[in-house]
Length: 186
Length: 189
Image 1: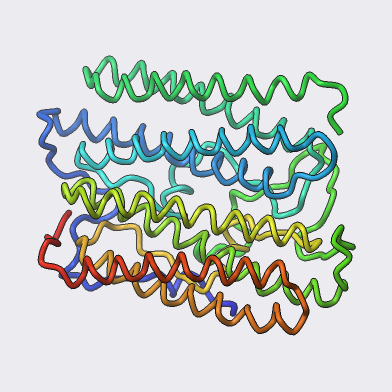
Image 2: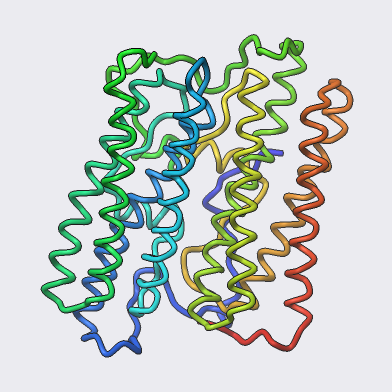
């Protein structure tokens, strides 16, 4: 049932099937200057790393919720995770269109990480939600920086994606904040 | 994280109270024998972690298919990865019902998962789907192995969950098999 060293067990299709190596940038069809594209891919990958960690953190929290009045919290966290997932797809597909390889595994997540991952223990609900809120706050700052930089580089589509993503993150953070303001929260 | 047992990214949550430690099984609300529950949790963590990894494989290939303008394949992979997330969620939640803790950190998930991740490069769509098909077969075998354990321990809830999800996984594996047999698949970036 258990595998051994995960490192040696990565699936590696033959070189003949390789289309693009991780951490490389190819020409794009969007007429965006290659240096600018590389910079935008880098910032998108930073967002993707953060979204990866937030997504799984939210999931861990709704998996392990228990007790009275957690039904609503569970639904909120699930909906938030849905939005993180949609946003991840949009940004990954954009990074790919720009000629990059989107973050798609643990190595990429680690390389670009601005967030940390909770241990596997189950924590009290208030601390868990506070950690979610912190992750949202970090991501919101990152997204704002991303909007600004993509704007300077004139990549309107990326600006648009990051802006609508930022709005969604802010709204979802607020939903969690409201639970934390509730004193009855265990 | 590959080659990184604890994973530098993994950290204790400061100031938090631990409600339950990873690796423990406590009395469960459904009054299922603790030892039997522990045995089932072990099995279900493999299923959960396997679905977790396959979710990431299939989603990565959805991005690849989208980039290669393989609309039909992309639409299917998008639905399939969402089903895998639900499967991973469902087993994680079942583990909690049994009094256990679902694997959640990268080292825990990689330790339990029978499905291996792919190197982080992009590969042709055909090679990607071949890998997916193999991974589905691995995950299906993992669920099948867990069914007799559920029967032995008298865990009807887990047995039903396993059998329902098996059907879903087999159907999606068949669809991928059909794509691989058809001529429509080009070698996408």
